[in-house]
Image (cartoon, rainbow, N blue to C red; front, side, top):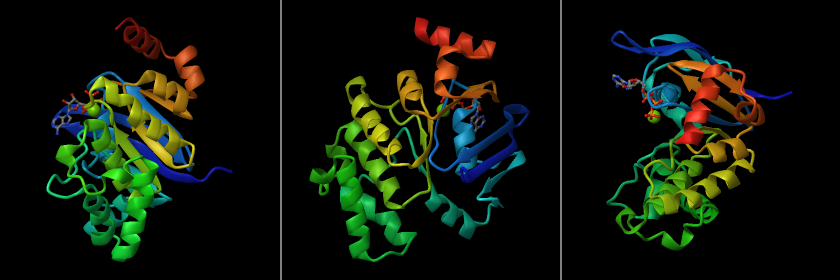
Length: 246
Ligand SMILES: Nc1ncnc2c1ncn2[C@@H]1O[C@H](COP(=O)(O)OP(=O)(O)OP(=O)(O)O)[C@@H](O)[C@H]1O
Ligand SMILES: [Mg+2]
């Protein structure tokens, strides 16, 4: 039987009277690669930010291995080391080298030895093809290279789930492929991932499940071969045909 890692139950989020997430129910099992697609403003980032505790929901609950995620600082730090996040804008420290960026969190949050932090950094920088750049500063790297370093840094924490919020949206078109290739490779390692993306071909090919969000709701949650070829929901069909037309 599949092992449940995250349960999102009846989640809602409002900013003032603007209801951005409405009654979201999602269960995430170990090894799943879930892509979330949907129009701009449908609430995708807000959902990831609630999962990562960058936002507090206004209703509902999130459970990590059946334990409710609470906003107690010590617990949040532990939780975030297990539920990592990769951002559109990389968020690397520009005054540090690639290697230092990859060793910082493991040293400060996990308190592992310098040697182990170094070994982890090298392992994961190799995995994303960035080992030759350990001494480079982020300003010397292309957007695609920065994002690959950000992914390596997230992997150094040994997360149980990685969340990605449009990891390729800030990249020049010619760099999108190298980042998607790294993510596709990660998907084959059994890492559980939730990926918000506008890359429909990637979502169709790599996800084990695709979620279409519309106006704060999960409008459809299905296998990619169903969602992309034979969607049940009229709004999904509309979104995909608009996407294909555009
Ligand atoms: N901090 C905030 N304060 C007020 N409104 C917000 C805040 N964050 C998001 N919103 C609003 O919530 C709605 C959903 O935003 P969100 O960023 O989650 O959408 P999205 O699906 O990620 O869109 P995109 O594809 O453009 O990234 C939008 O109308 C946005 O303006
Ligand atoms: Mg967004």
